Amino acid sequence: MTRAANQDRRLELRDLDRALALLPEEQRSVVLLVGLEGMAYEAVAEVVGIAVGTVRSRLWRGREELRKLMGMVPDRRADARMARSRTISPTSAASVAA
Image (cartoon, rainbow, N blue to C red):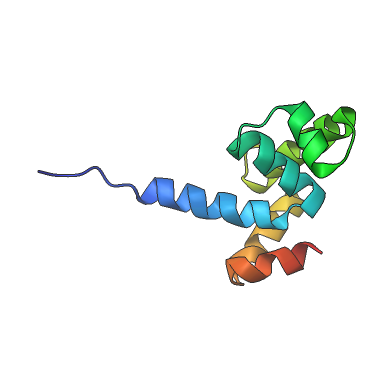
């Protein structure tokens, strides 16, 4: 039996991991709680200790920044940040964002 190659998927996940590490913590936490954990906005607001409107705002800004960092929306600044993140380890990428 043969298996389909999954290198593209791995590269996309690696790039997503790097892009997430470059987000400010307040955006990253909301994006992960809503997008990965599937939590409702109200639940995220309660967990993080912010208003629901703030959750929506941070989620929108975080998703928009991810689109830029992933190359879905042209943005030279985001391209430069992602290029820098490729030269350092994923665990230290968060410190570059700070």
